[in-house]
Length: 418
Ligand code: HEM
Image (tube, rainbow, N blue to C red; front, side):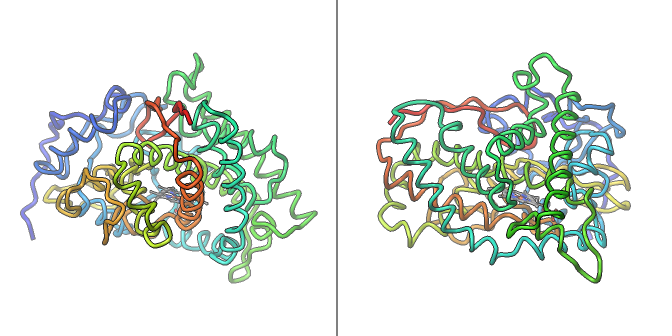
């Protein structure tokens, strides 16, 4: 075993804590992560700037390599999720209400994930595949009638929102818009433009409470009037005689709204931009879309890394990358950095639609919390890019504006022309 180094508790000279670090571009951040991966795979940083409440700890460990991100993810007994999963301090009740089982450990996590899995099956997702294809076609029909505009509004945000709420059975288009709007608030409260003069905590609270209420009302409605949809299945799902409570369902509604909307939306925007920057890869994919798309989808997610970070808490004193991590200390995993790790990915900055194998950690590092919606996300990406590449060959996108924040790599808007 490697000799443990008692942490000096000197903060790393390359601090990733200032808000300005997260308002820069991914390429700028990568300059820092490249050095950290090479020289200090695990490093100690001040608490993140801009937290909603004063931080409990005087610092946070940051792991930047693929090896350490995977190790932390796969060892939940050492690095737990039930003491928060976000990089900065967030009030405990918010974590519980917003995180659903993402913020739990076994046995509670396994129980809830299993209950939800009863409803959220690959078969149910396959059933919706044709509808996702039709919806992608309609979105591109509409795009073709608008020679210019904001790509996020016209394309990226529409398919994920449609898919999640179609699966859940939320029919009213106004309610869909409202839920997606609040889901945005859940991940964008740190952004000055989104907050528009309000306190970040106010934005987060308003979004959370509204989503919880919507989830609660919706669950009640389906208990009375069951239908053939995911919400009905959630109200009826049963494992070992146990069912989900309305609170648990509402909390899962929040998790799905956030996890299912922003991530896929940003993957669509970021990949459209990337395909424009790598025309040879675009051509290669187009030459044999059916033959290459499965491999390409993994590269879309690796390259975009739409979820940049998640956090765990050490359950005991333990060694990590040669450092002694004390019980209760935080460990932030930088997925975007692990996805550029030159020890795992040959030529990591190249966008290569034929990259295989591609053990990226875009959907998580492989532990019990591995993204439950990865197959839904990939199905949407497959269908929307089939439509975009084949039917809108003259599509060009300009420079995006990005959201400030350390969680999702979000594109607020991106101009396009046809
Ligand atoms: C490209 C799009 C997406 C990306 C990059 C992504 C990424 C992630 C990541 C990194 C995690 C945490 C993994 C971990 O802690 O080990 C996660 C969890 C999760 N995702 Fe996704 N996700 C995407 C799309 C979706 C969609 C479309 C849904 C729902 C339909 C979804 C539902 C979930 C759920 C429920 C969890 C929590 C799983 C658990 O805690 O057991 N995700 N996702």
